[in-house]
Image 1 (cartoon, rainbow, N blue to C red):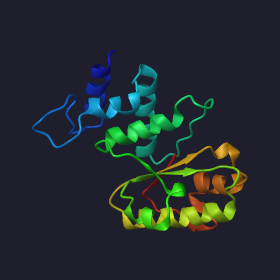
Image 2 (tube, helix red, strand yellow):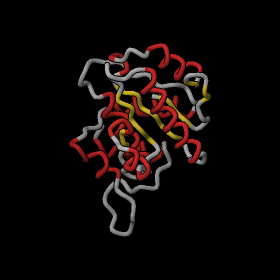
Image 3 (tube, one colour):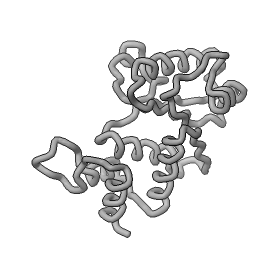
Length: 178
């Protein structure tokens, strides 16, 4: 299949309003523009993964992606989010200051987890994310934990993904974990 074929199916499956090709009469970004951003190439493999990931998100089942470094896991989630949200990009809460976080209107946030992240820092991030999701109850709020294999807080991550809580605090119902 060609990119246009995949985009036609994505438009149909996700019931997107975006035009496939640039349309002067629409204020929505075309799906082609979203896909071509960052030189992304849609293949049958990542197309299938997007569909499967979206079904898990709809069913509120945590999504876990595994693969070698640099194989495109984070890029796949970014592109799926952009396709579903008129080209809007996700924001990384870990890299933002408190003032910048307030300006972040994205409903997908990435938590970069590395060896410097401990339970206290992760709980602090989850408090901010949970509060933000509480304020946006009308929309699903995606949280992408990137590089969790490098973190020493495996027990807390297990609690977040399996129990849908952190340090005993329940996650908001509209949070989707990736």
